[in-house]
Structures are given as C-alpha cells and as structure tokens.
Amino acid sequence: MNDPIGTAAHAPHPPGCPAHEEAVRLSGPAFQQGPSELYRSLRGRYGSVAPVLLEGDVPVWLVLGYTEVTYVTAHDELFARDSRRWNQWGAVPADWPLLPFVGHQPSVLFTEGTEHQRRAGVVTEALEAVDQFELAHRCREIAESLINAFAGSGQAELTTAYAHALPMRAAVRMCGMPAHGADTEGLVRDLRISLGAAENDDPVAAYVRVQERIQRLVEGKRRAPGPDVTSRMLAHPAALTDEEAVQDLIVVMAAAQQPTANWICNTLRLLLTDDRFALNVSGGRLSVGQALNEVLWLDTPTQNVIGRWAVRDTTLGGRRIRAGDCLVLGLAAANTDPRIWPEGRVGAENSAHLSFGNGEHRCPYPAPMLADVIARTAVETLLERLPDVVLAVEPDELTWRPSVWMRGLSSLPVSFTPVVALGEYRNGNQR
Ligand code: HEM
Image (cartoon, rainbow, N blue to C red; front, top):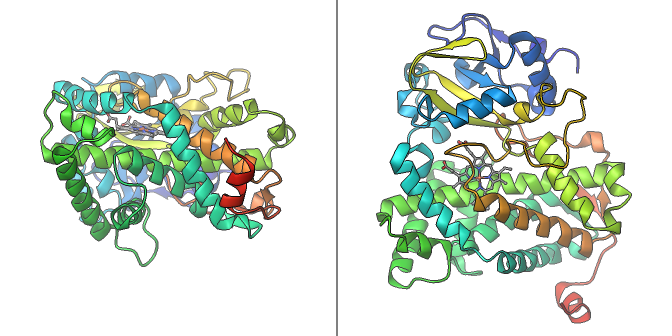
C-alpha cells in the first residue's frame, strides 16, 4: 500500500474540530484492509496523537502511542468515561451509526469513580467464580456440536459456523441460560443481530428483545439462583437493581462475544496461512498458544476503543486537548508502536500488549483468562477434529470486515477430509 493517508480523503477543517490542522478520515478501504499502514503514516505525520474524523466527519483524537494510551487509561481523573461531557454532541446526527457505542447508557461502561468500582467489582467477582475447567468442558461440547454440523461436508465457512457462534453460546451459558431452548436460541440470534446486523436485520428491535430476555433471566434468577454469573451478580452485597444488573449483563455478553470471536478467527487465519505455524500445528499445542498471543500483538480484535473524554484542558503527545474532547484509544497502533519495538520485531511472547485495555476500565481481570479458555478450546478442538483443515481460498483473497473498531474476517472458507458425525466420534474417542 502506498500512502494510506493520501487515499483516505482529507477533510476540510470542520467547525469545532479539536485539531488545528487537516484531519484524516478514519475509514475507507485502505484503512479496513491495511490499518497498520495507516497507523504508520499517521504516526509519521502527526506523532503519537492524531486528529481524525469519524463517520459524518465528527472530529476526535486518535491516540497511537503505547506510552500515551497507557497514560490516558491510567488517568481517569483527566480522561474519563462518561460521554455526556463530549463537546461535539452538536455535530453528531441523530442517526449516527456510532451512537449505540457512544451514547451514554447506565451501564458499567459509562460509570466513573466509586460507582464504577462498585459496578466493576460485581462483574469481576461474578466472573472470578467461573470454573475454568467446566468452562473449557462446555466450550468443547459447543465446539463439537458446531463442528458436527459441517464435519461430514468437507467444507465450511468458519466465521459464521464456528468462530462467532461458539463464544456467544459459551457466554449465554456462563450467564445461566439453558443450553437449549427457544429462549437461548432467541437471545443468541438477537445478540448477533444487535452486534452486527446484516442487510435486512433490525438491530434496534433486536436490542429491545435482548433487554427483555435478560430482564426475564434476572427475574428468574432472583427467584431461583444457580451457579452462574447472573445469580452471583444479583447476590453481591453491592445490591444491584434489576436495571443495573440487566445493563451490566448485556455488557458482559456483548464484551465476551465479538472480541473473542475475532480472536478465534484471526488466530485460525494465522495458523492456516503462516508457515511458521502450519509446519508444527500438529506437533504440539504450544504453537496454538503462540498464535493466540501473536494475534493480540499484531491483529488484535479490539483495534480502537471509543473512548475517553477530557475532563479539563490538558496536553497529550504535544497536542492541546480541550475539555470535552473525545479520545479514541488506538490499541492496535499502540501495540505496534516502534518506540516499544526499536528492533522491529513486534509480537514477543509476553503479554504487555494493550489488547485488553488498561487502568480502571480495562477488561476486568478474570475476563481475559476466560476468553483465553474459550478461544484456545475453540482453536484446539477444531484442529483436533479436522487435522488436515486448509484454507479453501488463497490467503490474499481473505477480506476484513469493514470496521474501524473490530478486526475480524468477513469469511474464512476452509476445506478438509470429511469426518464422522459427533456420536460416532464420541464412541470411538471417549475422554
Ligand atoms: C469472556 C470474555 C470477555 C468478557 C466477559 C469481557 C468483559 C468485559 C467488560 C465487562 C468490560 C468493561 C469494563 C469496564 O468498563 O469497567 C470489558 C472491557 C474491555 N474488554 Fe473485555 N471481555 C471479554 C473478552 C475480551 C477480549 C477477547 C478482548 C480483546 C482481545 C477484550 C478487550 C476489552 C477491552 C479493550 C476493554 C476495555 C475498554 C475500555 O478501556 O474502555 N475483552 N470487557
């Protein structure tokens, strides 16, 4: 790619833009297919904090530097989470596609200070009590039933049939929904539509149904608690109201779904396209762990997070930030910041990446471990069941979903030698 900044159209300086210079649109095909090129160009041109325009030419700062993202996320008193302080609300159209992520909701995501500690404490303790072995066992069951649906055909499109379906089912089970039944199926379907609607879907109607179903789940668990995240949240001494519990359960289910699904997908892509892994996938599980970690450094699911809002006038990376300015956390850009990789070898076998965020609002600490269990089980089970799985297209034919926020493939078609159905498989392979 030559000059992604050149191809992403420069926009004229809109009124109220936080930048005092031309800002760059954070969208377009160049960005979607090769974001690392754009981050490199932005860094070269603006340094570690760049003025960019989101859809509708709404101006925000993109924080690209590892040090700067770490600083912003560690200083809640300066860069806070409540979006109501945004100084650009006047420029945001009523049908702005990012409203569902930015418009204030009474959930853990938008709370601050002691109220955030209360809400995040409930989520953290409820997730902490998830038995990781049981979760792995459930994920394996879910994985096997999903694989069983296409195992005999010798081909599959793994994003829909596997990578997105598996964490969704794992998350709703973890929260206490039954394994089967119309309610669970309905919730899985509506969460999928509300998180990434296809052409004829209605995400708003789906989101309303998600709220209604979670409300019913909360009422049911108040009456008859079980060994699940929902019941533990309701029993917590912080005494959540039903509305708070519903809001935070939706956050937990949604947060568990998209990033974990894309983590699985991006890892499978790496394993299927990179010789370093392809050569020894069957040789040991270590390489699956390495691939999962490398993806978090180089192809992280949550590329950018919107965001933080400046509490008062300040400076960052040499820029003057005004009170109420919005900052997008460029997690993917920060992970590949050349200042932390002076020798150019990005993706070491440590976990100092920012893929799970940082500071008060980071992914609550049991969640990355649970996500690892889900993703690892998904990848390993697939490779065990379909040991000769290969890509069904050339690697450069794979395309990425058109999103600035999440990095995930549009599709991952594979082929393999057809294998026996689940029942036969189990009989011959008792675990
Ligand atoms: C079991 C799976 C997961 C669960 C239950 C979960 C849950 C959550 C929750 C509840 C939050 C909100 C924290 C807050 O605002 O206080 C959060 C934040 C976050 N999660 Fe996760 N998550 C999961 C997997 C992942 C994965 C796989 C990734 C990416 C690789 C990820 C990346 C993030 C990031 C970057 C944030 C921080 C957003 C910010 O700073 O504003 N999560 N997660």
